[in-house]
Amino acid sequence: MGINSNDFHDPKIARHLVQRISSACRKPVRFMEVCGTHTVSIFRSGIRSLLPETISLLSGPGCPVCVTAQGEIDAFIALARQPDTIVATFGDLIRVPGSGSSLQREKAEGADVRIVYSTFDAVNLARQNPDKRVVFLGVGFETTAPTVAAAILAAHQEGLNNFFVMSAHKTVPPALEALAAGELNIDGFLLPGHVSVIIGVEAYRPFFDAHRVPCVVAGFEPSDLLQSIAMLTDQVASGRPALENAYPRAVSDAGNPKAVAVMNEVFAVADADWRGLGTISASGLEIRETYAAFDAVRAFDIRVAAKPEPKGCACGEILTGVKIPPQCPLYKTVCNPMAPVGPCMVSSEGTCAAYYRYHGEE
Ligand code: SF4
Image (cartoon, rainbow, N blue to C red):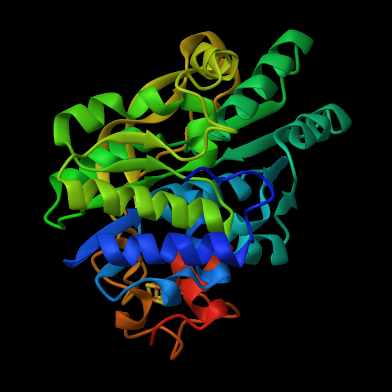
C-alpha cells in the first residue's frame, strides 16, 4: 500500500498499517531509528503505544548535538575563550555541558557567543565585524555539511579572512557499521530521511550488502513511520532483508549529487569521535588543505582531546540503544531540560528530552 500526501494523518490508513504490522510481527524484534527527528516524531505521534509489544523501537545516534563528543564540546568552549572572537552556533549546542563549563556559561561570563539560524548568518557576522574572528561551530550530518561547505566557498570567493569553521560534522553510514558491529542485535534500521535526501538510498548499499539487515529509509509523518515499520516487519517475517525506500517523494537512489559535490569540494573524510560510539574510522569531515585558512582547528591551534562523559550520564548507552532514559539514575531526579546533565536532555532531538517531554515509558 502506498502513502500519498493526503494520507499522512488518516486514521484508517494508520489502523490498516498497525494491523499489518501486528499480524506480520510474531516474534520480538528491535528496530532502531537513526535520526533525531524520527525519534521526536515517534514520540509526538504516540506510535509506540500503537505497536504490538513484540516491537521495541530504539533510538540510535541520530541527534547531531548528542553525538558530539565531550572533547569537541570542550574545544568549542576553548574557542569561545579566545580574544577578539565571536563564536556562532545553532541554539541547542549552547546549553550542552562541557567538562567544566558550557557555551552558555562562557557567554554569561562575557564571551561573545551568538546563536545563528544558518551558516550564512555567521558569514554575515564576519563581514560586519572585520576586527573580530568569527568561528562557526559545524555540528551535523550530511544534511548540514553541504550548507557549511557552501558558506566556506562563499567566504573564499569573497576573500573573507576572519571567518572560520570548526568542523565536528559526522556521517551516518559509518555509524551504522559501528552499531552493526556491536553486541546489540538490531533487527532493522529506520534510515534517516533528511540525510538520505542528500546521500541517496544507494549510499547505504555497502552497509546493507555487508550485514543483510532490514533497512528502510523513512519519512517523518505518522503514516510514513508506520509504513516504514510495516516494511521492516514484512522483511523480518519473510526472512528476506532488503534496502528499501519508504520516502520516495523526497529521497532518490542517487540523492543530491550537487550538494554532495559541494561537500566533497570543501571537506575530506576523516576519523571522528562520537559520544557513545568512540572513534569511528572515516566517519567525520575535516576541512581540506585548499580551504585550510577557514579551519578553526588550524587557525586557533585548538586540540580536541578524548574526554569522559559527565559523571553518571548514560548518554553514550542511550545513543547506542543499550539503555533507555528511565534506566539512567539521573533521569528526572537530577537531570531535566532545565538542568541537563548530558546533551540527550538538551537537544530538541535528544532521546532523553523526548522521553521527558512526551512522558515516555517509565
Ligand atoms: Fe545523560 Fe540526563 Fe539522559 Fe541521564 S537522563 S543519560 S544524565 S542526558
